[in-house]
Image (cartoon, rainbow over all chains, first blue to last red; front, side, top):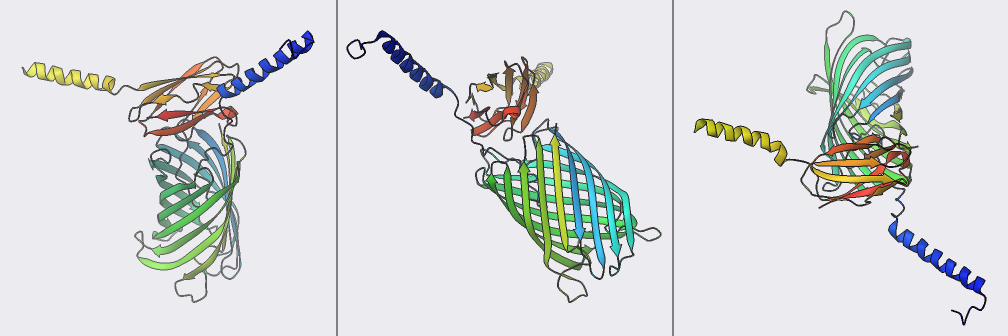
Length: 300
Length: 108
């Protein structure tokens, strides 16, 4: 070293540089690698109207604002906008629940088979119970959850006063087709319902459905996707008489702004369907032409 | 004889929780890094994960695949219980610093 570096100051500087370089490289070797920005996502709200199997982490609580809109029926003007305020809690690693209050704004004018109505009303209460049967993760490429959503409604989808009790039962299956990038989900749905208008007798009906969705993460916080849903409407709690069916398709969006704030949006259009006794395409008696959904979640 | 058998059965019932005792995992959070970064745990046993936060700010220990989350106060410690797990790598993180603070529980 003395031979090559004549100046002592320069030698000291060179030595210090080498020590610093070595210490930096050792520090890098000791410290953890930088986390992959595409870390795990909760799939519950990833697929629009189709649900994902995740239920959240034990101890998680959140406040959610969910807006659902429906547009288009035969013969006139039809539009509703339902606003739900939801409290969600996950008390165990396999069970979560939600409590919801609903308000409905409606504008029904000249729709075939429906009375005109317009206004805003408190429309009902509901809960959602989610039981995680199989958790997605090491040891299982799929998640499987059973969901029950009992609901009491005092205003129906046409703005009419009713007493309505329903439960949507849902079997939810999902999978990461490409880890932390591409997700898929399947839902099977059965929704029995009994409703009574003032002065009328109870009317039992039911809905059977199936949906499928794919979602791809285009950025660490942004996921885009598409879904298809098929619903059949029936008289009777056990799907006795077919009344109509509709096929919906549409895009989905999911943005995880932070670990605590999430936005999910979906829009779907009825592209095929038929109502009992009506040869025209689409079932606009039992289902709307368009549906939209927006969820905003704040975890605390 | 009958008393002895009953006593043995009661003793066995009381001992059962001890036999099913959690395996313990200890984590330290310091300078917003988990130490150790890749702790190990046995498969098929319930776990008690103790997280000590040596930083001056609170953190939230969370894991999507372990399905737990709990706030760890600055200078404090919490213990979370986790069900028996299959072998594999389970990511955990500080939800207040998810982009920088993570680790992996290696279950064998």
